Length: 385
Image 1 (spheres, rainbow, N blue to C red):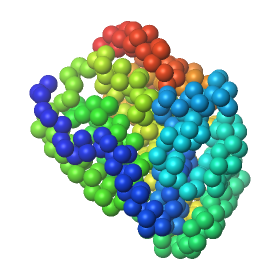
Image 2 (tube, rainbow, N blue to C red):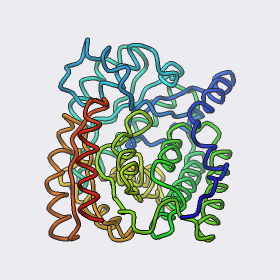
Image 3 (tube, helix red, strand yellow):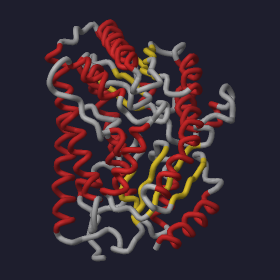
Image 4 (cartoon, one colour):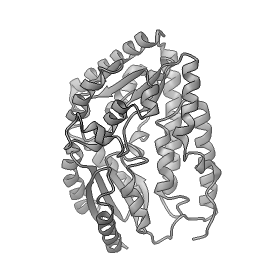
């Protein structure tokens, strides 16, 4: 493996969220509303078409959890507690900047947490169907998407035209294609970067104010990483175990499993979770009724809140094969019951369909189990090397 400096276009994303704060201030000065969203089910195209700016409020750090537990039970998913803790402590600049909140009924814990949050700021709750295949599900979800459109028009005072919405669909599809192209550079050796390097790139899509600038930044990165790959440079040895990381979303502050895998000699070539490919794998159909197309695309998101959730199993199978992985690590957050229950079925598929080693990690945001996890991950990687 030749040593080579990482391109500046990659380093540019390391503090993307912080860079976005100044842009958010400028947007507010121009009377644009800021909309805080908690999940990949929120149709961001509608928010943009209403002239507002979406940002993510999905909590991914340990620090605010202790304050959240003054109100919420301790035996609740850390993502929910972190998100809520940031809100009640007002220590998240993106929450503070948000004029409106958009939530979704992906789990019972979030639904009840949102009942408290809606007392703090204007709030719209998207009611998800629990099936992607029931004939009534799409109609119900399309009604929710339309109701969100009416809510955004009322909040912003701007009429959302089909032309505006179609423009945003094209822009977001362009962004998704670029993110997917960058992700697929890891599909074979050499890998120009590691999973830890791509984490801030994927997470950056949650904090975009200037879409044109963001798309240009992704184009620059794809060009630089493509050239790095063509040069033969690899960020890890060819025999490094190639890992598919699945399960719950991660981010800065909750990336310990990803970090440990690569500290122990593996390389995470693909992340199936909401931070990774799941959030940009699907495109919105660009012809026809934009509201129908948005509803169809977002409903297909293969989240464990859906039953059955065949889309996730299909995606994991596809990624395991296309990225030529040597093993699957399924990371779930403690008390995230839907992903924890699904883990057994993912393990079964890994063993009986993909013939791949599998490990399930059930953890939280704290560092208390770091060394225990390190030992487990080292043993797993040694087994598959």
